[in-house]
Length: 294
Image 1 (cartoon, rainbow, N blue to C red):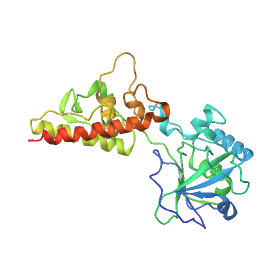
Image 2: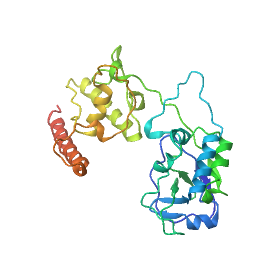
Image 3: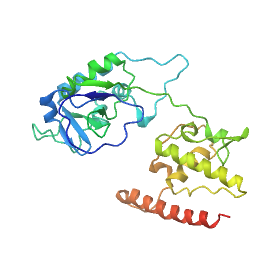
Image 4: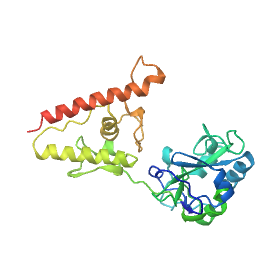
């Protein structure tokens, strides 16, 4: 969702908005609160005390929601959970999720706020911002009423409201072959979200691998996917590796859980070492791919 209002702070553009768009607004609408909302890097941080947080969560829990259609079974991706679903899991859940105030200080008190709503720029002019992590099924009028409980947003002009989109995907490990071809009709190839990956970069990665697989087939070469130790290789195996037992296939984004573990490495060094291994293995794969071209 987006809001518009006076007093947009200077700062660089932020990254892309959250998957499953949240509400967007212009600059914080209450000038006094806007001045006190700390601007850190690409974000404006709007602090809430305990009473304000309690009021906001109570309103979220009681707000009218847009119900799914009869044919839709609501299954939410853990990385894109609606705020009302998080609130239903526990009254403090949002405070340890998208509203966590770790590392922030309220400039009015010098102390860490009870919770914080973060705003991220949506354009280069810094005239529109989205609420980070606020994807929701709340009805549009309810969003305007409820999010106005955040003091800095009390008089905001809302440009867009939050929503949850449906993600359609196939049971890729059961339906696709090693070249991302449909087993029942090999002329059909799949890539992107339909294969069961989440995110723009992840979808691009699967599209690239699908294209490379088809190019290899058309030129009579074997398709050699990236090593399993790389993130692209991990995504590929998530999509194409056969599943055993009662494992239920579900979408994933890029995460270190896709990569094979590194035994004997300290926990605080684990991700760095896995990244170094991935880079080295990916570079070696690129060299071998280039050498194998006709």
